Image (cartoon, rainbow, N blue to C red):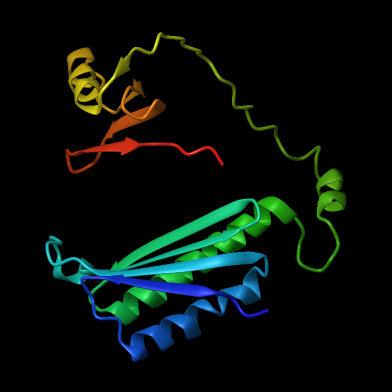
Amino acid sequence: MALKIDVYSKDLELTDRINEYVIKKVSRLERYLNEIGECRVDLSYIKTARNASDRHVAQLTIRGKGFILRAEERADNIFASIDESVEKMTRQIERFKGKHWRNRGDGVPAAGDVLQHIEQVEEEPELDIVRRKSFALIPMSEQEALEQMQLLGHENFFVFYNAETSKINVLYKRRDGTFGLIDPIVS
């Protein structure tokens, strides 16, 4: 089955050459993970980027049953950003497969080897939730949440019930000093 690849561009002319290049490069990902259901490639040119070598952006998103993987890379030309995002996605696929399939690639599970060497390996500390916090959510607008976040001195994030959308949202401070809003969708 051929991989369906959707290519979108923003502030960049999507020529046939670029489109064919994207399809050629991205279709190779199916070799590494054949459960890919949908692939989306967003190409853009950001003229306000601080560094001239970061103006061409290629963002690659693949979806399958139970997973979404995303890679974004910036470069001085669009072809380099496509290459780098495909390489990054390949590494993410390998990491994803390693976490989910946990075998060595020769069809023999690694569990037998682990049992032989289990006495030699020290146990890693188990990750536990060390604190739980409950609080009442008061319906408020996004602007009120921003003001509340600043008044309370929360520097990184603020969880609130959005009165306009009737959803729980997370307001967070971005690295560049601006703010972002996470609006979760239950699927």
